Length: 388
Image (tube, rainbow, N blue to C red; front, side):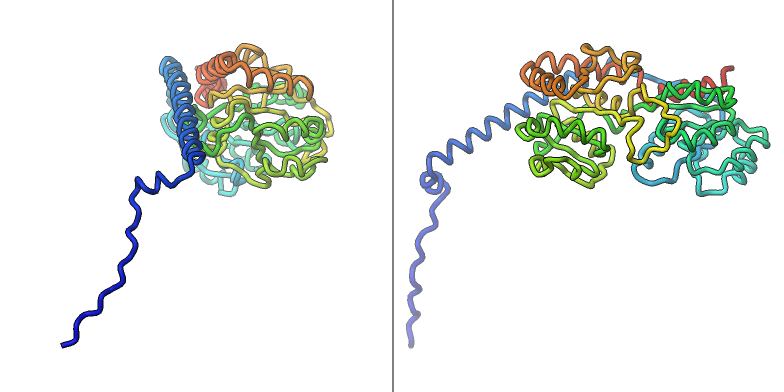
């Protein structure tokens, strides 16, 4: 009988303790240092988020419910308008006895005939035929339009506005413009913020930055960023948007730029939450990129991003607009700059004055949630349309 062949013995696998003993001491120190830094960052952000949530708990807002039926006409323009469509529709749903939703691609007039709403509210309206507005008014139904891009398309909106009973515009400088066109009911109504999307959150560690900027590289913005590119290249910054290859020294910032990417509201909010400072730079009224403003109406009102950044509890550094102080107190609830040099100086200052940075951001957050949500804006709109 043939005996079994002995198998060669395998070397014993070293246990975890042996692996730890064989790891270079320097690597152990790096791992421990990383753990400590991560723990400290988590504690710091946890405390900050706790402060924000405690402040927000003191600011509940229950908007009134209007006993009316509204037919809301969304833009049907896709992204980036679709989140705005949804935010307005969701807010109106909670504020009206009945809400019907359609868009500019649908037979709105026929729907209005069948539903007989108390009002038809059109968002943006740049692609909605005015003959349909006239037909709805002929039914005895109130009509309203909320222009979302004034004054950049005033060549188009000037032809649309006179067909509506009520005109709402996010730019205060266009109110008189529409009144002179014969519009009897014109109201300045900026866009606001949807707290379900823009609010303090705990961002992923990969999103943590010193600075962030979200927006397209319009030519006037490029001229400004060209002057501070060497400085920004030395900072931990994330830039997201279209056309940033226009920068003169694009290669210096290319690793920090996420080009050609549209972020949805939650991704945008996460980006804001991850930054210590968010730069806001308004679009110039005379920028040649996608402007249709031959009347050269100037822009003096804050953009929607102003409210969205502040709603995330992040310090905002924004260029100055004449109307800004109506919404936030500069230096108290928001920080401003008037030149490339001042922007650089204030970035350095606030990155080195953590308590002051957080205090301004917290006050800006509270002001936003107290006054600048879509529930606040639509309360104003519906009160104008239905004063009794």
